[in-house]
Image (cartoon, rainbow, N blue to C red; front, side, top):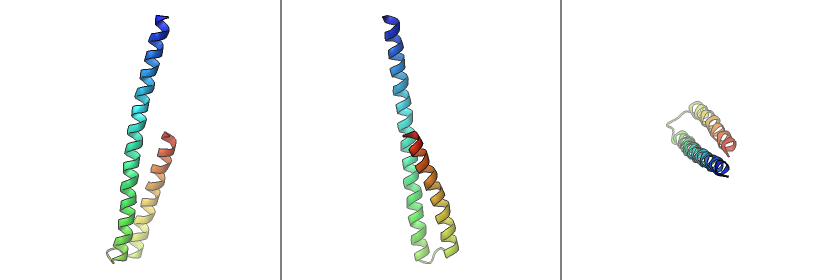
Length: 79
């Protein structure tokens, strides 16, 4: 029937929009995850070169690890 076809079309459009939003969220989280991993690596390099103290490095590392975990958890939930 026409009513069923209209309903099906609306449902498919809604699913398509949800998938677009899901993909945007995944891209955002993956981008942030990449950034935090680079920052974590850079903080280690800064520590090794003497730009950061051990305490500063450990503090940054802990902060970046927490952010990394949040982004990974969010990616898992979105998937």
